[in-house]
Length: 111
Image (cartoon, rainbow, N blue to C red; front, side):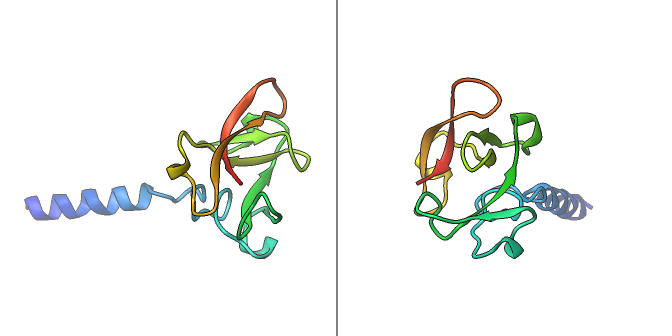
């Protein structure tokens, strides 16, 4: 019986992880992409986004998924938040970028 309970807990925890499409492999924000067909919204390419990154257009943080910030670039895009470079996938750094919709900067994964 204990084994069945443990299996159920593991399955529930696994289904809760990464199901929102946000993270270093997410198709909403943060995952690598070659074209917008790889993402739920849009693929952002260029020098600041090695191997591309999935982004969601925004005008304020309220329009971004948890774990992301609305940054004042490319007309406003949600980028993954971070505390240290290790929070970001390879080729990305954790850097302060200007918020869109309110003042200040937020730490996000970019190059």
